[in-house]
View (spheres, rainbow, N blue to C red):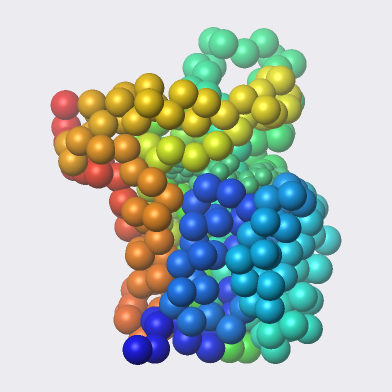
Length: 265
Ligand SMILES: NC(=O)c1ccc[n+]([C@@H]2O[C@H](COP(=O)([O-])OP(=O)(O)OC[C@H]3O[C@@H](n4cnc5c(N)ncnc54)[C@H](O)[C@@H]3O)[C@@H](O)[C@H]2O)c1
């Protein structure tokens, strides 16, 4: 049976690991012609490419640079003839640091780094891909978060950045209609190797360092009582990326959070 994304071409940022990698793997199963996988982790991209050498093109680069995205879109056109689906996803975490945990200097440096990866990286991806997506009536599925709607999932900077993605999705959905649909998926606590910022010296620190503790904490805080894995979210990306199956959906973020967003206390 044909997959939901048969003959489509996708570009995913932060594709070497975690959610991005799971999305690429699922898109391949759903029949995409090819995926351009963007990440700063060259080894992770090489490992991903090995899973489908003819259908994955890796672009090593930093999402803070527009040139990374321009090159990735060029690669999609050169290797696969165009672009239909964009998934801005690369991000870093603040390990729930509150405002009073920063000096002014640390706040400036961390804010610049986190916002330029988690927000400018998304906007640059859209800016680079816009013409190609318009030409093929494509769509965008951004990785948002339960932190896009609720406090406490991150600290002040991460929560602000994820809330801003709500505005980004809604505004771009209007600006890019009627040619391109723009939506998001908001995962809850998901076991990955999500890292912190260099500015705080957390470039190598990861939320997944103690998997058992992470899973137990998330399960205890989640109505459905389990910590999610990246694979738990990929179906929503497929749904929103499929023009056939979500033709009327734009400007929306679907939470995939085990019910955290549904509870009041
Ligand atoms: N893990 C969670 O609990 C969770 C929950 C909700 C949302 N998210 C979001 O999901 C997205 C993916 O995170 P993840 O949890 O899969 O983490 P991850 O670390 O497994 O994946 C993120 C990828 O982005 C890449 N990356 C980071 N900064 C980059 C940069 N400047 N340039 C290029 N690549 C860069 C990393 O190398 C990594 O491969 C992020 O936007 C994150 O905020 C994560």
